[in-house]
Length: 399
Image 1: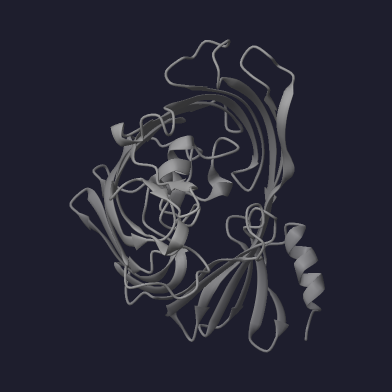
Image 2: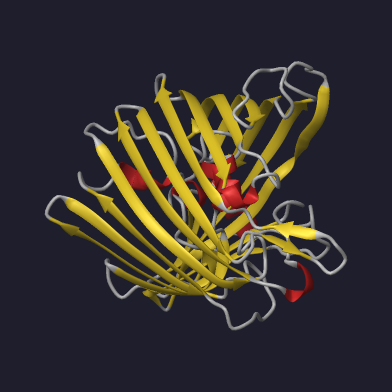
């Protein structure tokens, strides 16, 4: 070897961008936008990235009692990602592993599940891609945007209530341009059981999504990171809609949530629509989700217990503005409304967030601070039951 691999890593982390030869035909370089890149001619490529989110958050006892009711102080995410191709640029792969307690589902479960993404991709040309493995379903925009590319420390309550999350199966996508318009069509046929699941039943999950970009593509694929960090010189707009039918789902959220008792199942039909606009440092995002449960949404157990499958709708709106190239302010409002069938079983919920981000290296290295306020049943006064404040500080560090 011309140069020890460890030394190449150190050079990469120190900002060395020129390729270093570390073996016969094998080179390594650091790409500020992509990470550590290992290549061997046109036969092999691997991009290595890591990131971590360190969070310090305090939640009040109630709206008018600011004593600490609970806290969220932890390593929220610690992830390692590999992607690239083997033998040909048309044969691609992506692997993402999570090592924090939440990433491995150890908050509510007892079995560590580090695998988040593991897919093989065949991309015959610039328009088509065919994927098999485990990855995110083509669901709502806030979910398919990486958690490392968010403007606030966490996703919204609308996402928590109605997201499709990850699943295992086959995926297909097409994207192309028609005059000045760009279109993307995405479809998936998956198990419906969520990530790292055991073999399931005969019910599958069918998901489709259509995206329309009437003014052409965003700079640096900016429709898949929050905030207008590219400061688009002309108006960019993305409008999308999707639908998912999870047949005989065994969990309350389809791919997520509690398991229904006594082997029972429900079919969950979810409609999603979202839009994104960016222009000169301004970013506006909105999402709408609606879910219908086939059968009773409150599933009773033989021992008298129950599991609730949330049926209803949610709306989310987010507005941000860059204050110079490195500083940004952002606000968000979210609403989740259960269906009439769940009246008395769960409450309408709302949240407002106001945040500030200091970008050091795009979304890869940043500091985020935010204040949140949550309330229920449309009663936003601080002295109503269910209201509470949150203070959030989060640091993102990665390559």
